[in-house]
Image (cartoon, rainbow, N blue to C red; front, top):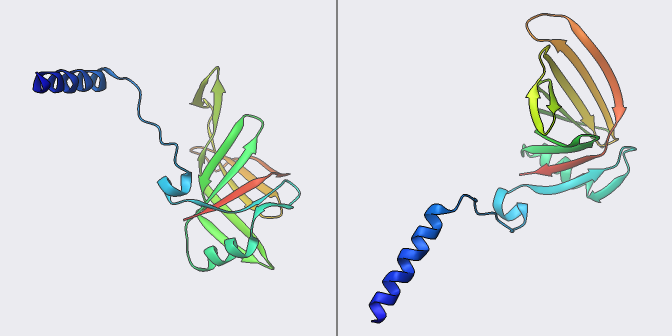
Length: 154
């Protein structure tokens, strides 16, 4: 009888797992699951909000990977830093691999008249962005603004 109950339980458990459409979600901190650790954060004026600038500078000097997270009016934007520079205690991150997108309702889609865009952000809260047409060497704009940035290292 006990073996039958165990068998029924196992069959019901397997059937429940097979019919489930949700993926398991980890509640562990990002550091434990991804290896990324928040090293530093600054507001749009370059004022430290979390972490230690020296920890970020040391990570850059040691060749660690850096990921930046920027809040904007549409939500959050996260990207790997392709190039990093440190000068006079300020860290700069550059990424050149973006193609323009736009939200259409609740979907994110490539724009019909797409352009490449490249950014440089700094721990002073500065963002420099330049845009070029896809398939042509035609400038589409160059802007500077101030943004809050969270700097993660791994």
